[in-house]
Image (cartoon, rainbow, N blue to C red; front, top):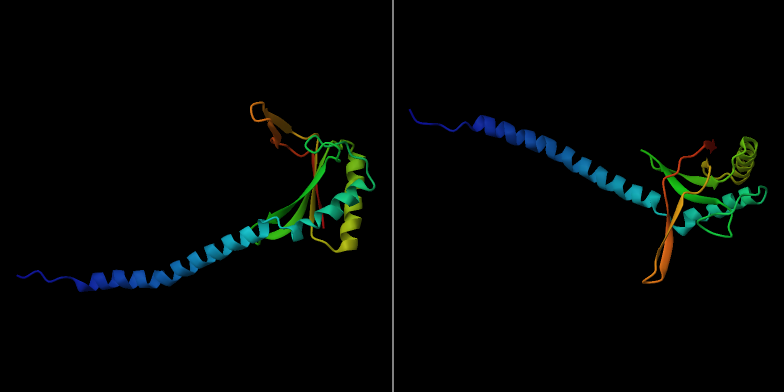
Length: 161
């Protein structure tokens, strides 16, 4: 008896591959588009960060903050752009250092709520920290110096909608 190749099973395997090929292409396309959207949302361009300065001013105009360790001569507050997953909605993240009094923290949050409702801006995440964890470094050979932020744990967080 002669061996006859089984074309039926080969054809079924090819059909399965053909059925999954469009799904694989769509999934790959979605992942590339999502990666592009993520990069676009997290890129800290000047247009997005322009909203940070008024937020910082809303805090510093009415509240006396300790001086920053990382930026001597400036108040210990900073602002950055954050991103919610999975829809990549952006928000402002405000970091305030050295304000330990709960009443003062609440007053800052109230002022940011007033500011946010008047400006119809994006959501704001306010985080209070005990102190800045700033580690300085220097290289005597080159004369260069700088610093980097170490791990920090907020003592209080509040969303301003």
